[in-house]
Image (cartoon, rainbow, N blue to C red; front, side):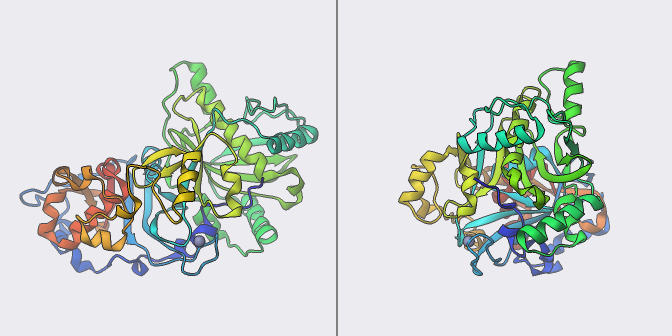
Length: 450
Ligand SMILES: [Zn+2]
């Protein structure tokens, strides 16, 4: 079992991270927003019947720039140049709660770029995967790794993953694990550059490192603790000094930075983003150990923040050998991106075996009929995108989306979806895409920067 490289970032996305807004499928023609011209020039003014008045975005909210359907990008797994397409947003600030919701609808992030793969038009089938960290049992290969660390650093364990009581207090004096912010440092970049060059034969730059692994997209926020005692608060702030959000889990051996695990700590998940290490420690099975450590962190945090239960490993591609390790820990679920239900992986594998190509795991749904026809534009653009009835049914008319013209600073203009068609058909389609891709709960909460 190995953790060869970050699955959810560079390799999977190809060039997508560097795509400029103008290159994306959605038109950047300003004329489509004509109906909003008045509001841009006079934010806060009365906008006419049916429009709300402008208000101001609060500092903790989620703001995104919707880029729409992205052109094709090559696949890092099967090396197909045909690859796949994605629906793409650039996050400005995203709350942990909303990123959690997006993950539960099949989204992932790479730096500030949020993407949802078009399953109907993809070389590989990407299924989001999560392990039930509280119930996972160490397998034979895990125990072997743990023994190595015990021998080398004196890390005590009971081979059942319940041994990491303290994330920053390990058995040996030589090993130290620090929960750091995702702030850039030359030391971290030096390690990243070495790892990319020696392990992946890949060049890197400090700029792409900052964009990809250092930019703080998620807003740090306080978790819901099991109780309000001073002891609990103290323990949480020791493990998560800034609350929920993104961290660099830094492994020091002696005084030297030996590895960094980039993780997002969300209300229900620890989501693994990337891991890089000094190749001179390869013999220690660094990738495997870091995964075990992250699973263990879920358990430790769960005792303090009961909602944290899962270890999220991003996308799983069943036919890809490099991904085998992701399905290593059981119980695990794959996300049905049509019904948005997490389904036990054993049931999914049965269905995948019977239905080659992308499929839903819900036997009630026929994967050949997942194209919805209410929004022709969207269906044509991204046929496998689910258009839930609650979004496209009668409720859609009462939904309000919160738009924020880029020039108007933090001003937000709430507009009922039903009014959008009076501005433009394109604008209406744009809103329907947002509802369908992000889901109604997130759309209500999000400030869409135009
Ligand atoms: Zn592929």
